Image (cartoon, rainbow, N blue to C red; front, side, top):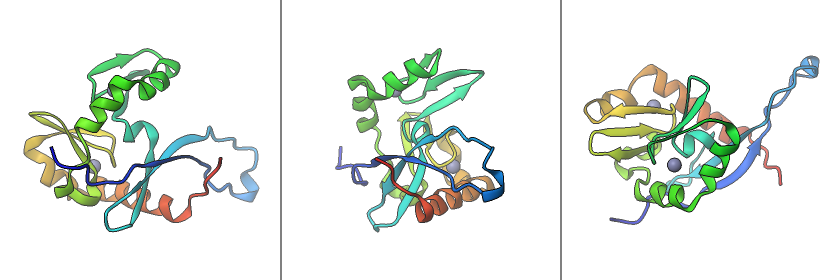
Length: 151
Ligand SMILES: [Zn+2]
Ligand SMILES: [Zn+2]
């Protein structure tokens, strides 16, 4: 196993800039993670996406550990658990896919952090060239350009 291609991510809360006339719209702050690539460029992805957690029918599923969780509290605890962290370390973002942030989660499947989806190994190359993926990648780049760190 080679060294993970990416540096340790920084965690922060991303607050979308509010339109002055839309003050009454309260958005739930979402936890985001800044991923710094080897090239020093940055991508900002939702924390759940970084951790490989999907929302399925009101439940959460960690595709890295292959477990389902009933609610947000359990999900948040799961992200902090040593077992999950270990699993995550074992499937780092693959250097071959650079900015596309794919992890190999099992022999047959990859996980796209950018889109928060599981991708079959046969279509990984096709997946990263789809419009949907490019759009999500652009969003991640734009967030990186505009994020404000809160501590
Ligand atoms: Zn997990
Ligand atoms: Zn994708």
